[in-house]
Length: 286
Ligand code: PAF
Image 1 (spheres, rainbow, N blue to C red):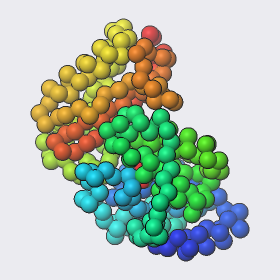
Image 2 (spheres, protein in one colour):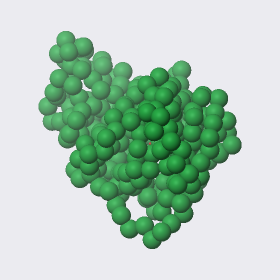
Image 3 (tube, helix red, strand yellow):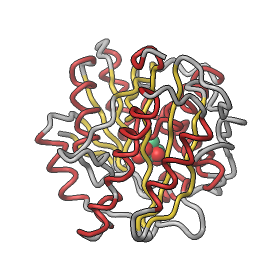
Image 4 (cartoon, rainbow, N blue to C red):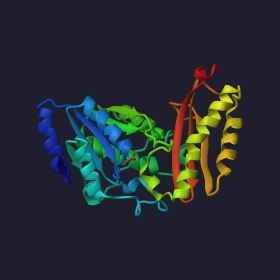
């Protein structure tokens, strides 16, 4: 596995590979590599000649009171995991390398960035789009891989790529869960054993929705209230949002469409976790 810390270095390596007509799959990460990232790497390996992963904890996507400083980092462990999973190249730039030269540019996808996580984390998706635009320009991959746990991020990145004519296919892959159903996230490490158990309420609330749909309850507001009541029944929980939205526009739905996204952001203690599921009314004979 080749490790590059400099933009010119990684560009040169990729230029040579592209001359040889190699296809490039890209897995952007903020490190603290877990099974979710590895599922992206595996798909990228299946679909491309060369796989490159980036590790960069992007300061632009953290708000002033968020966890940038304490976001989990472990370079040695990450490199060992990526190497043992057959990643070809890792791009691991320092902050100065990415933003050092009086950086003034911001990329923003309107509307889609203002709802759900964008509402509670203003500027977050501008930071994500800005760093991804840079990474896409540096790496010029054929395909880039994203986990659908960050469903909103996936939709926003697809829109940015289409609006700005990046020649990149954005691939979204299913949420990877621990055996007990908790969606895997680098932030799960913050959870105490007790809060780790409580965190299962996010995933379990999807079962509540299934039961309500099976019983013909088709009112988004009733369903959201039932989930809220259920989650707040656990100690140490605080709901950031529970939303039922259109799967493409992310606009809130007052009436169900055939497919809808249920998206949750919940604080368990001080840790903010997100989860989501797409429901299809057809599967409940509605
Ligand atoms: O999903 C993430 O880990 C980050 O938002 C990403 C895509 C690596 C951009 O910093």
